[in-house]
Image 1: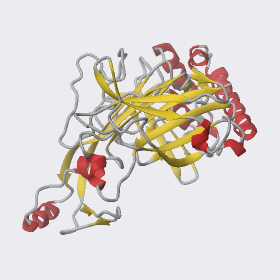
Image 2: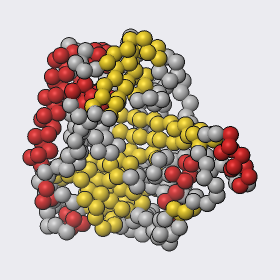
Image 3: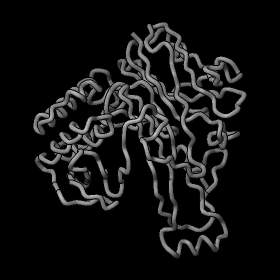
Image 4: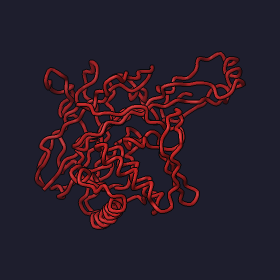
Length: 381
């Protein structure tokens, strides 16, 4: 496969099928910061005939991490959210639209609310339904472009609880979520199930029309073992930053996989209608010039203040900027004039940034100095 300067994909060689083994790592902080890293960890031919056909072609097996960087393989970080389930911002792929749709930083619960959820199954289900209704009212009031959830009943609860299980919950709360699902009218429970790795657990499944969902839990801890067929959770634990792994876990670093993202910072975190914010992103490698950024601004103010995609954001200076703690750092200025306004609308915003695309050098997006997809939250009062 090749990609020309217009961004069109051209397939070369025989048509064969590959089985890919994909690894996804997700960090969720108590402050709502989330990092999501997805890579192709293994590749094999789907059938012997495919292997023979490709061997006759005389080419090496494609590096899918390099081909799909920014599409399937990615490593992105969102800083400063305060609601759960948290929502990552994927480079070149837009934002994941979960239950909160476009309502920035707002989902079912805050971290404090998560820790105060009831443990009785009926009360827990009622609290989740109540949070869904309140979220729908907030979206209607702010003019947010909400996305319909997975549906009501047991199937809807399955999707909501799958998102909550990605949050930093104590074991007792995880067991309560399992009990709430297992006793949900319309859910099917198999207490003698095994996941795709052969581990025993409790399977809870539900359907809504043609859609079907299934989750397998550890009955002792409430930990999620598998979400949907063959999507196994192999390790989870508490770490002290979004760049470390639980004890005993080795990192996966296949060739062409995205490197660790650099955490953006914005100051001040809370501004007034005329504030000019400063965005700082640590540079990669030995780049001498700061890139212009393609940026997406999403907010909770009324619909008339919705910004969306905007003209490219240039660096404050042509050089890579300043040094923070010895690291070269790109610096950008963001004011209401960049939105073609005299003042900011009051509200909470999410700023998503990726390197600006250049038709003359499309491969620069995949190079070692490319900025990762990242987003950061700020507020205007």
